[in-house]
Length: 261
Image (cartoon, rainbow, N blue to C red; front, side, top):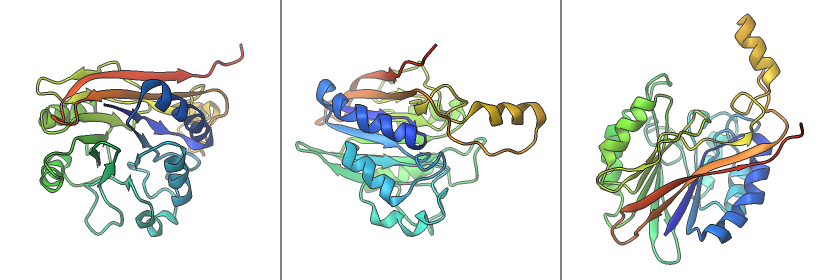
C-alpha cells in the first residue's frame, strides 16, 4: 500500500495546487491515503475548521498541524468539530483537540500522529516521551505515520531512529524545504527529515520576498504576506505492508508549476 504525506500548505495558492493535483496523484500512484500538513493554510498562519474540511473533501484522509495551530483566533473553539485533524500531541493536556487519529481505509486502518519539536521552538512536552505514551494507546496491529513538526534536523533524525521499528513512517515538516535523505531505517521505518512545502516557490518559504528581504536588511518588523506566483507541491510516498507495518520504500514527490521568464 502507498501513503502520500504532503509538506506544509501555504495560503490559498497552496490550497489550490493541492485541490488540483491530489485527485490525480491518487489515481496515478494508486494511493491508499493522503496525509497533509496544513498549519499554514489560512493566509499563511493557522487553519480554520472550514479549510480543514475542504482538505478532507479534496482528497486528504488526515490533516496535521504544528506551531501555528492557534494562528486563527476562532480555531480553538472549532478544532473539536473536525474529524481526522490532529494538532501536536505534546501540547499541554488542557489544550483542545487531539494528537493522533485513526483513519479507516477499505482494507485496513492507519494511525496518524502529530508531534512538535523543542529545539529552537516554543516550549512543549518531550516528543520522545509523548510518542512512547501514544504508541501504548494505538492498537498494536495498526501502521503509524508520524508528522514531526520541528526545526532542528538533529532532533528529527534522532526521533526517527528512536521510533525505528515501532512506526511505519516518520516525516518532518516545518522548514518548508524538502530534504534529500529519504531512507528506510534498519528496522523498517520510512524516514525523511522534511517533506517540503506546498505553495508559491518564488518566495521565502512561501512569503512575499520584498518584506522578508527588508526585514533581513534592516531588522525592522514587517508583515509577511503569502507570495503570489507559481506553486510547488512537495511530499513523499511511503510504500508499506499493512500486515507487518514495515515500509519497503520512500520516494519524494515534487510537482512544480512553471514560471514566466
